[in-house]
Every structure is written in structure tokens, then in C-alpha cells.
Image 1 (spheres, one colour):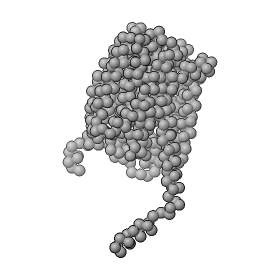
Image 2 (cartoon, rainbow, N blue to C red):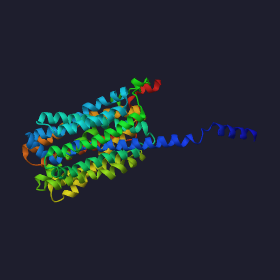
Image 3 (cartoon, rainbow, N blue to C red):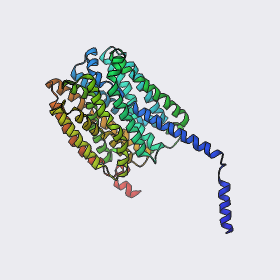
Image 4 (tube, helix red, strand yellow):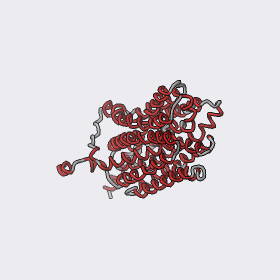
Length: 429
């Protein structure tokens, strides 16, 4: 009994003063909410750079003198920038911290979106679009890393929030860009430039987070650098890269060309923007629910197959009867594009640590986006050469077969740390 009393007394004495605990807890709670809002705001700004352009692409082409092949190159610019700048993101994060890099990314998005609306020629327009997409690229890679590092017990819900906000931003830009442009006088420059306002709001939030977290990179802060994995040895990493690249091909063709496909079928410009918005808005609820469901399962192969089947049906319908079943095809392709939140979730699940997620995210997205570059260009060339959408849509349908095969390999319950280490090294350890 005395021993028990002594233990209880020591526990009581070791507690911090009660008046200090609520303040610390409340401060951490408010900072966590601010952080979550900042992540959602950043995600919201990752796609309007692209989807605001799709409904206005014809106006931009006519004003800047772009041919269909060059317009196809424009739809491939996101993949090129994401691949090139995505590889650089982890190194920058190690030097100054991922929060600082994402903050810089928001600044690049804001500046690029605003400045390109004043471009007087195709080259300048492409260059400033690339600046905005560089910001998107580093944020694409590092936001899953930020989630893994600062929300390790809530990866599924936070990836869901991130994916839902990304889909919402994508859908809003697709839906309101045309009517917003008309309300601003009909000039595409205003319709594209206005999205810089949302980028500026996200930048302010991330500046607050940067100040509050006072984060430093491993090199700047003197912390030990994480172990660098020989990630190219991992079959799961290569499978994720392939899956990511092929889903990105389809997603950016849809975002860049879907409005044109419906317009060529005789559907009005305003309605095509709404149809593109439907495709994107489908991803809002699905992108929130899917990562949670996927994170609870040992593997995600069922989701890989279901999403691929939706895509094949959507492309086939779009080729056969684009106007007759326009709303159904928009919904099916929206579901197919939810391969993006699925692959983000798998990236978070296939590594054990934040450092591993950083390497895997950079590798899968960097390689994946480079793989996706030829697709939009080829689609633009096929459309320009034939004047029809049968061949481009057939090509996209075929791509879903290898996408599904890569996805089935990537969806199995594995960790890259186990695959990247040579069996002899594991035995020695």
C-alpha cells in the first residue's frame, strides 16, 4: 500500500501545472488547423493553371497563333515541368525544409499565372506557364511528404483532404473560367489572370505556417540526413512511376482537350466548360473517400481495376456518341481520373518513413510525368492529322491496359525499403 501511495504521489507531482496545459494544447490545435487549411489551399491551386486554360484554349490559340501540334505541346508542358522540377524538390527540401519549398511553390504559381495573362507571344506564354507549373511540381512532390511528416497518424484522411481540395480547384476553374471571362469583358487574359488571386491567398497562409513552424532543412539545421535508398532497385517504385505516368497522360489530355472534343461534336462553349467541371467535380467526394478506403486495405488492386474500366468505357463512349451521352462520359472519365488520389495514397503507404516517402514521391512523380510527356503531343498530332477524335481516343483507351498492369503491381502490400536493399545486405544486417 505505501508503495502504491508513493507512486501515485510522484505521478501527481510530475504533472505540469494545469493552467499551462490548455494553452499549449490550444496553440498546437490552432496551428494544426492552420496547417490543414494551408495544405487544402495549396492543393486547390495545383490545377487551375491547367484547367482554366482548357475552355479558353481556342481563344488563346487564335490570339497567339498556335497550331494543333503546338497546342498539344502546351498540354504536355505540365508533365515536362512536373518531371524536371519534381526531381529537384527533395534536394531543396533537405536544404531548407519542405514547408519553405512549398511556400516558394505558391509564390511561383501566383507570379506565373498573373504574368502569363500579359504574354504577347507563344514563347513568353509557354515560359510563364512553365514558371507556374514549376511551383505546382515541387508542391505536388512535397505535399505528401509534409503530410507524412506532420500528420503520421492521419495519412489517409489528410491525403483525402488534399485530393478533395485539388479536385475542387480543378472543377471550379473548369466550370467558371468561361462565364468569368465573359463577365470581365470576354478577354481570355482576364479569365486566366484572375486565378492568381487564389494563389496569393495560399501564399499568405503558407507564409504564416513557415513562420509558425520555423522549420529548417536537415543541412541547415544540422540534423542527420535521412538514409538515401537505392530506389531504382524497387519494382514497386518502378510500378508506381509507370502507373503515375499513364494516369497523368489521360488526365492532362482530358483537362486540355475534353472541351475541344465536345465543341467539335456541336456542344456550346459554355456547356463544354460545365462538362469538364463535371469530370473534375466527381473527383471531389471520391478523392476524399477513396484514400481512406485504400489506406485501410492491405492492397489496392480492386480500385485499380474499377477505375481503369471506367476510363475505357468513358473513352469508348466519347468516340462513338460524344454528344448523345456527354454527361455520362464526363462522369466516367472523372472516376477514371481518380487514379491520381489513389496513386498518391499508395505512395504514402509504400514507404515506412517521411524520408522514404520523399524519395518515392520524387521518383514516381518525376519519372511518371516524364513518361506522360509524349501522350498529349501525340494526341494533338493525331487530331491535327485526321481532324477526328477516333484515333486519339482509341490510343487513350489502349493506354489504360498497361496502366492497369502497372497499378496491379504497385497496389500490392510492399515497402520500398525492403525491395531497395539487396538481399545480401539484409542478411548482413
